[in-house]
Each structure stands twice: as C-alpha cells, then as structure tokens.
Image (cartoon, rainbow, N blue to C red; front, side):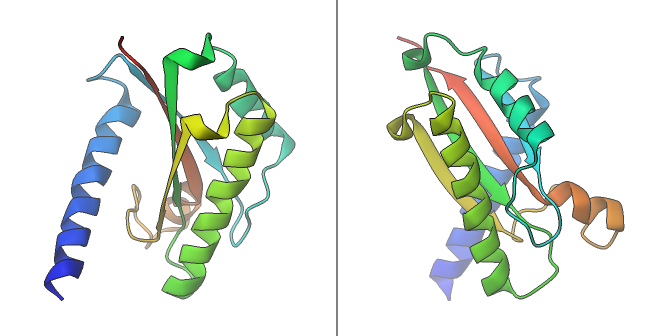
Length: 142
C-alpha cells in the first residue's frame, strides 16, 4: 500500500509538471499538442492526423528533439478498461508519429488512463477534453 501512495504521488507531481509544460508559459524548450478521441475509441480521425502532422513538421532536424506521449481517458468504464484504452490511444499516436518520420526510439510513452484528468470528469465537456493524448516535444540542448 505505501508503494501505491508513492506511485500516485509521483504521478500527481508529473501530471502537475506536464500541465505547466502544456501551458507553454514556463519552459520554451517544450511544445505540446493534444490529440482528441471519441468516447471508448482509439481511432484518430483525419483532422487530428493532419494537425499532428503539421505539429510534427516544425521539428527539424528531428535528432534535436525528444518526444513524449501521455495518454488519458475519462472515468467512464472500469479502471482496467480505461488503462487498456489509454494504452491503445498512446500506441495509435505513436504509430502515426513513426509514420510521419519520428523514429520510435525518440518517443517515450506514458499511459495515465483515468488517473490524471486535466478537466472535471463530472461534466460532459470535461470528459470530452480528458479523452486525449498529449504529445510533448522537448528540444535537446547540446
């Protein structure tokens, strides 16, 4: 039980850090893009694919960047299902990124499932906004 508390505390700390990065107000070496999904889906629609492609094409040469995928769900369904769905969303985005030229070894995945919502899962709008994968890009300083 103490290990679970430590893991949850570290996850919360990481989540808070990511929120700061997504806001893009603190660290100029980071950029972020959210890819949104329908409820219970890990299908990336054509608009989201185009937005991801446009986002990724600004990072050249690719060797100067590292990429982080953080996948999320709302809290509808069991925790087990949401963990699976989060993982599938992360994989789908990972595969798209590789398709657009990002080497797989440059990408780190972290699946949060329902455990790190940015928005209120008690509202329809909040649940819609939590159904996402955040792609965070950091320029490597040499």
